[in-house]
Image (cartoon, rainbow, N blue to C red):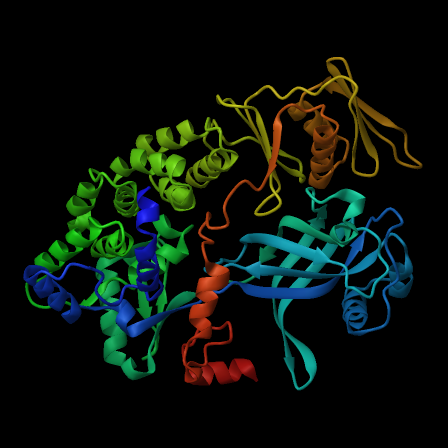
Length: 571
């Protein structure tokens, strides 16, 4: 297999990629190629002068209160977390906060979330909830996270201090649905609220010039070079994406085509030429064409060609005829971001045949907003791979959430339900992140006779023949019942209509599967982490910022526009 034969070379290629776009990437040493390499060495790219800034995920957190527990909560012990929560409750005007905390229906929890790079005010993010280790709470099942204000926290002067409130969190708790029930007691003390956080601030991304390159003139030159290649519609006006703020910082706006793939966007920006020898563009394209033909150097060459723009399209199209699948994929991915829909078929092939390329292939397909891209993604909805099918759904949803095939319906405030009329084995997909969502691949998901399942603490589902009886029992209130067809979609709607939440619906699905009364496959989060533009944010981008020189002063979350600004904010 070619991938195995190239494994010894891939390490070197990965090293070149990790270094951005600086430095030549070709192995041949012929005189003709040596001359091209010399020319390449004389070409200076944005990445030769700058490092990416703002690609880290920003953690925000706070002590919070969970209510609605069925007697599984506890009175938290004295300590800093209780003090923080008490202060917050008193500020909100809560009557008798100590009495509320002592109730078995409540629990103190620690809540955190991550604001992703490039987040905008109003964007939603996942919320993570867990019970501190010194609390006596038994389970978070059935709980509701009260509105919580999340902020950055740091230890300063042996005291924990919090900064500005950057997010709000609230919603029903989803305890890990794939844990081993009572055998995994720790899992019951951790939960999520998918999409339960709302950002209260914008997050900038940009480029920091290295200490040896800092000057107003170079900062402006870098901005001008980027703006000749990239534009975006900002406040109704089309203009360049780069704004030099100081001699050391260039702020970047994100073009629509890259909004779900910031990591690639920054890589391509760093491949833009700032200094190019006279008449060197043609020779440079020749060198990149040679590099693109080699599977080892193709990924880097494709990024550089994408940074060149429209002039590179003929070379990238040529890669689609390569006998090597990796070369075809590298060319197709770059073409997608250049608006060339001819790449769609090749990206769909890569998503099917190259598992390692699947996340990037699906992300690239999501930007081909025409018949070719839509047709390619719709074909993938019938794939036997749950990862490919759900990835194709997410790509289509990113492209146009209102498209008839995938738009689905909103079930109150609980979740979204999407029933897709597609071929392939029946699959029910549930999410634990991004947003509460159930996707049914195929329209037939019957439930077997004899099923008895719970949906939360007050709803029970019983299947008799072809009918499902969904009942809600609450103390002090009349019992409620609904008779619906014994199908997953009908039962989920009934659960929500009776006041159930997304975690209740997920619990029902899990119990139906465990009792072997649901023949459809049940899958959770069948999507690689790299999709949706998250890629290596938690590792690669954080490492890039961690490796900045100490005098860059970029550890804080505010843009490094000026030293005086940072001093004011720190104080």
